[in-house]
Each structure stands twice: as structure tokens, then as C-alpha cells.
Image (cartoon, rainbow, N blue to C red; front, side, top):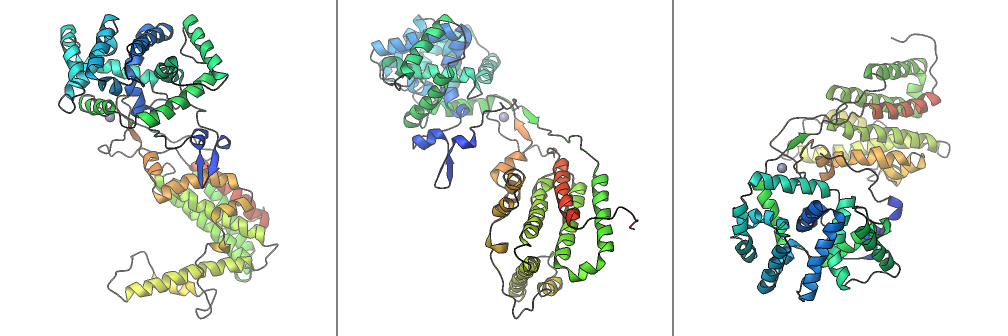
Length: 499
Ligand SMILES: [Zn+2]
């Protein structure tokens, strides 16, 4: 995989919340724009211009492209957007004249490579007829090997792959120049001056870098024009079919690898579990008399159990990411109760009742099914579920609360205990995995095709398990917060051995 460009995400505070959707500034001001990823169609549709830019350089390249646009303008050809699809779908007379002009200007090198794609798809559409008629002979004469051509495509696509990079933005600027130079697009007042300056700068210098203000305008403008006029470019599909047939996948395993951890598992686990045991031994009467002590000790034990089990599977597993959510939610619930106890004495009991209520629902459901033909899941221990469901409350008076504890959601609990950042990072990340969303499926797919002519697809034939990045330090961090909270309430004595 190519290194991800950093700092290219749109900051959340620049986005606008509308009816539950956080909209990009672009979408908030425009509607119904089809925004396919850059690589998916626009880049391929502009490739002919990229080939010119690569050979001629930015200044000369743009001049040559503008001369083509000038020709289109003077011949009054109805072409508003210079994509390969549009060019191939021009009126046949116009198309002939256009390509004759291209050959006369010795720019045929920009179109010749596409003969292979056109030839391969010639029976699918008639749009390639004129193009092949004019270029196939020359192509064969010059005898270009398929390998060389594919490599050429690959090299160019790599250069322009980063959608917000200098080269890609410059290429988008070239595509827009047709409409801009004809005056079909009118820029906001002030920006047109910048544009003129930009053209001057390009003709004087030789850089792909555009004035940042122009660069962002160009990207937004191109996307809006694209969305309205080029919803279904045919050439892109043919190009992808062609490359999927003739170009081998380049499967890379992304071994996110285990990083060095702060402390070994044994150390973190041992210290916490020994201290917990000691605390329980020293406060044994609280086990019977204090609801708070019951909840806090058993919850921490539950957290430690998860920690220990994940250690067996590995902190670089999907299970580790998913269980992070469980350990975190258990901790946050405890913290929420602790923060709430000053206002409500019975909060711990209420939490226990809530648990019993959940079990009673399960018991009632399982009775319903076990009396029928359904087979109960093997993981159920009906007897234990029945027993624990009435541990806190008698069945006769124990209502079943279908709401989340305290009728609030987990996010609000994170907020309430001033740890909302943990919700937005760890918890939401884990949630993708818990629900098996496509995002998690993709994150857990550690083999990608790194062939620029393909589209970073995964490869399901390769079934090797590649570790994710280790979550060990994250577990250790959450447990340290938990430990501070727990032993802040029940300090462990520094002396004495617990077996
Ligand atoms: Zn591939």
C-alpha cells in the first residue's frame, strides 16, 4: 500500500451537522453531486492529459492541452468536458477532425496507449470504431508491447493517485481549463484574478503546485461539474475490465505487527489481580454487606478475566479490538455509578436490579423456546440464569427494564464521567468490530492489492491470518484508569502477603 497522506482529512469542526449527517462543506452547499472516488473514474478519464503533462512537464503540457481546447472552441465542437468517454462519443465528423488535429500536433502519443483498451472492448460499444480506424494502424506499426504499455499506465496512475496531491489537482485544473478558457464557467469575483495570475505563473514557472486557493476551488468545481455531467463514463469501466484481465494482482499483506509493549502481560495482570485479592481479603465483610463493594470487585474481576482471555487469543486479534469495548463499558459503568452515588445512595442496588432484570427477560424467553421445538443455545445454563435472575429481587415484584441502565445511552455515561474522548476513539473503533460493519471487515482484511491499475481490492483467496496492531498498551491504559479508580476507593495495604 502507498503511504497514506497525513493531515488530509477534513477537520470535523469544518463540517456541518444536518439532520443527523455530518456534511462536508462542499456537500452542505451543493446537492445531488455524484462523488465517486477520484481513482474510480475521473483519473482514468483524464489520463490522456496526464500523459501529456508527464512528457511535456506542467507548463508546456498545459499549453499543449490548451491549444487542443482552443481548437475545440474555434471548431465549435460540442465538447464541454475533456474526458476520454466524451471524446469518443463526439459526433463522428468532429471526432475525426479532432483526432486528425491531435496527430497533426504530434500529440497522438497521448491517445495511442488506449488502443489496447479500445481493441479489447471493440465489440461492446461502437464508440471505439472511429478511434480504432484512425489509430490501430499506427499502433501496430510502432509495435508497442502490452507489458510496456501497462507499465506506462501504472507509472502515470501512481503519480496522480493522491486525489488532493499537487499533480492530481493540476490534472483537474487542466480538465476544467476547457470550460474556464471558453468562459463557460464564471469564477467568483476575486478568484478570476487569481486564476489569471495562476496561468501566468504556470507559463513562467514549471511546477505542478497551484496557488492553494485555486487548488481548493478547482477540486470543488471539478467535482460539481463531474457530478452533473459525467455520471456514467463508459471508458472507465472498460479500462478496469481490461486491467483486471491483463494485469496481475500485487497482493501485499499489511502486517501491522505487534509493537513493543510497555510491560509484559504477566506484570500488569499479576499486580492488579494480587491487589484485588488483597483488598477482598482485607474487606471480606463488605462482600456481604456492601453493594458497592460487590459491584466494583466483581466488575474488576470481569475486566481482568477479559484481559487474561484476550492474552490467550492475542492482543493483535479482532477479538482484542472487540473486547476492548466490553472492558471499557464495564469500567465506564462503574465510574458512572461511583460518580452518581453521592446523589443516589441506592445506585449500586439499582444497577444490580437492572442486571437481574436483564436475566429475567432471558429466562422468560428461554422458557418460551424450550417448551417448543426450538433447541436452546448450548451456552445457556438455564438453571443458573433462573437462580441469578431472582438474586436481588423476587420474581413477583421484579419488573423487567427494557431500557439501558438509567435510561441513558453509553455515550452519555462517558460524557458524564468526563471521559468522552475514550468514547470517540476506543469505543467507536471497537463498535465497528462488534457489529461487523464493512469498516471493520475492511480493517481486518490485511491483504490488499497494491497494483495501481486495480483499486486496492482485497483478496479473499488468500486466507492467511495476519496480526492487527497490538491493543496491549490500550488494555494496560484502560486498566490503569480502572485501577486508579478502584484502589482510590479501596486502598490496598502495602504490607502482608496474599496467597
Ligand atoms: Zn488486483
